[in-house]
Amino acid sequence: MNTMNHRYCVIMCGGVGTRFWPFSRHDRPKQFLDFFGTGKSLLQMTVDRICPSVSVDNIILVTNKEYLHIIKEQLPQIKDSNILLEPARRNTAPCVCWAAKHIYAMDPDAVIVTLPSDHMVLKEPEFCKAIDEGFDFVEKGNRLLTLGIKPSGPNTGYGYIQQGSAEKDFPGIFRVKAFVEKPNIEMAEMFVATGEFFWNAGIFLWSAHAILEAFDKLAPEIAQTLDAPRDVYATPKEPEFIDRHFPDCVNISIDYAIMEKASNVYVKTVEFGWSDLGTWKALYETSPRNSEGNVTQNCQVILSDCSGSIFAAEGKKIIVAAGLKDYIVADTGKALLIYPINEEQKIRNIVNDVRSRFGEDFV
Image (tube, rainbow, N blue to C red; front, side):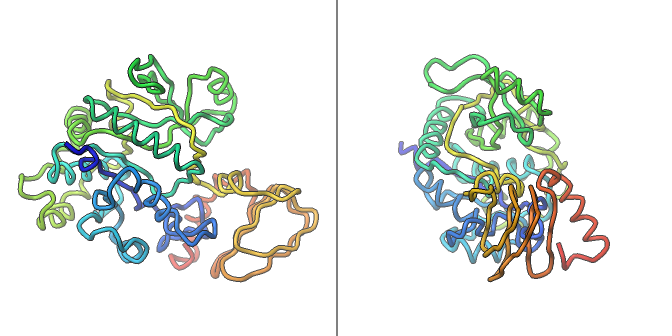
């Protein structure tokens, strides 16, 4: 049996990316943007990254209906039948359950890697090696595997995974002792000092059978909502069924619904230059800086007495600034954000204020 033929990738690309406003907007979220001037969006880079491990015919995209035209424009190599269109946003658990049911209907022997669409990986060979070793692990048993990133410091923006006992036949893979929510700085420092805690990257591997069994046991309300007659999934009847039933799913993440409850959860500890690029600060920290610690993205600058700041603009634009320390300056055609980088967690609330005061055109 050629195991490669049974390996699938699910890429979740329906998020809005509010924390990257004003660049990331409702009609073109951050996964569809070229943040690094490479000519490729984060989503395109994600697809390229997984192709050595998974055939392009086995890549499934789960997104919101309104982004279909962008996906077809950016990824013409993905078959229409491999693009699953959510009629409503219901977080990651219903998304994962639907994708697993879709894949299982086509291939009951399938194993799946589930990826976010908007992460950065600097060491792609190490990433591919980790994915291939992860596939090998979940192909050999009823196991749910998550990747844990070795922390480069006490980051308070990530959830953590605590490793338990080692799997003797699989170096670098451990039982999961606990999942821990985003900690305060004192807890994060303690986690890093122990050497037992790893960042939760939100990258998962499992067989289609194993994850569907986990939904039946641990999140039966989602499994039952998406339960369909045998001739629905992977047939022309599927979109109509999903349009009718998917909005009834509870809004919950795969971490809460399954991973924190299951007894057969493992973590593979990895290092491959990872960042979730969730915020302007994360982009700042992963970008080249000049001698004053400033980052520029797609713009020219004239700066005086500025440090620790990120400057970004759409289109050909010059930014002139003085006296800014630790600031975000992000300029688009419709909105200009000038905000302390250490208060970026408030950007979500700002977007809500903009929407309520000035309407959808600006978000």
